[in-house]
Image 1: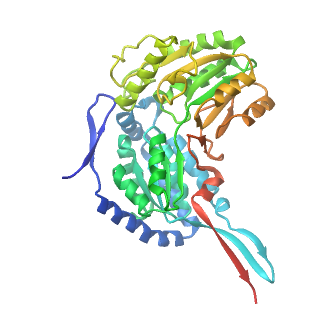
Image 2: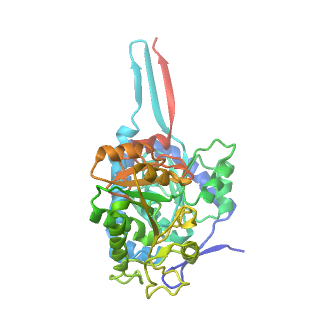
Image 3: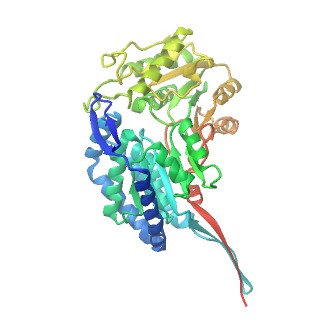
Length: 459
């Protein structure tokens, strides 16, 4: 019996598309093709691989209107935001720009007696398991540098954004990447585990849930295959007494609510200096009430549905539990939200504590809790009181204070006066239950290759 995956659109619950799931044997054959094709791809000059990847970028950018509409149908982001090509292109272009430096051999000695060099060589077959929330940008973080470094790539995209994997494969193949070097596979969890546990691949990059990351590591146990994981967060923002209040409200609330709150590094907790707390909450509530929740195909919509009904149920449950325990909700239900569908009213909560799941568990939805704090020490303690560690945002006019606070935060990235952004020149990484790995920046090339030493004695 043929197994299929149905992609259910969050717009109206209809089946947007269906795709056949590859069998275990079909997936193994695909991995074998990837392995056979990799050596010839790696043998191409680096400049040629870079040029092909840059060409794929141009192809993806040819139809951003189509991208925006398809993303609206698949995961609910409003078309007014125009898709993801801006961030996609920025990341791909930067990784192409720094490739020669990132992959350059480290010459230790080149004398009359010895030549000693450390080269970077590709792992072989890289498996990229990509998420649905920013399906183009998260995938390209690894796909572009992996291909540039000489690896072949197998992409397994999330079932919620299957079409994105197809579009990426179309673009890279048209650009000149051989079909066996970049493959988009529709496979289930068991087959994914088989590819890892039987060492059909050489490196795994996974972005998704903690449970998913644990499954990847269990599959790789004993194989010595590197597994890079980015498993989300519960990212905090701290507004000090000297902060620019208007900028803090606008940016932090956008970081909390944009994309229906479905951002790996979205703001889920805000701590505000007591002297600014009331003013911050008042402006945050006004900002949130100004959002228009509705059909993402409507250009006037600023906030679309959550990608899946089960995600919406979890957010509603966290809000209801918090209110039952004494939290105050400041936003009345919006018209598009019937209390049961994927359209979730963005919510601002006060009178929250860390005993509540909404301040402890990942919400991944349009809700944020706001707490007053007396000083930096209290803010640092609360910001670190989480099992996640992806990013943290500090709002202040004092850069020395921001760096001092940042040094004490258990996180992968420290922002000052901004949030919810991936700088491709900086390493994208996390700690604690956010996982481990090094994406983007020159460190990505170190992760996607292995060191190979040459100790050559001249005679």
